[in-house]
Length: 260
Ligand SMILES: Nc1ncnc2c1ncn2[C@@H]1O[C@H](COP(=O)(O)OP(=O)(O)O)[C@@H](O)[C@H]1O
Ligand SMILES: [Mg+2]
Image (tube, rainbow, N blue to C red):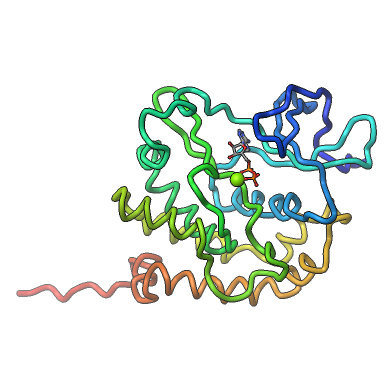
């Protein structure tokens, strides 16, 4: 029989400092920050879809998965694999935003994430919604917290691009921290999003029928329409359409006539 939940909690660990989360060990021996599923607060299941879309776009996030309680299989929630960002982060010698800007391949990572956040209508990409986990000599960036995305305010993403924390974060990082916007990597993410079909979305949520809410159903129903409209808006906002064509199809640029 197919196991409904990919992971099970096998041990309760001391609570994480963030009181919203329980800290648990799952049967893959990894530590997860776990939030029980709550029908009134759909955030965690929306996040499940967002994390899956980030994965399709090749954007680094901690593993995020549905986990059930080993004693009561009907009780479940969602957990993200714990990433230790303790080394130097708690007593920051440099402000967090600077540390983010100097992290490994920050320009590529944040340009890609910018496109995804625009697409998902994420209004909450502030500096603490990125984890900075030192690995060897590098700081690796990980995207977390997609709770304020998609149909956060009750209706599925329709028109318009997000503002809020997300806007000011990217303005600071690209303007004040003078991080280069990596337009080509960003465009590749947009191409990956445009290849996501209704079937892909259905497959992602297929196992979790209990949180198939009306909002999710309507997102699935009009996926292609919503997707295409948002892609158009992102292209207009980040590039004008003409530049987007050049970035996407450089081979199509007519060669200059050779002067003799
Ligand atoms: N996978 C993780 N590994 C390590 N720390 C995490 C992880 N997920 C969340 N945190 C910590 O918990 C804080 C709150 O988590 P977050 O997912 O942003 O929830 P909230 O919606 O409450 O902001 C984060 O800012 C981060 O410090
Ligand atoms: Mg957060």
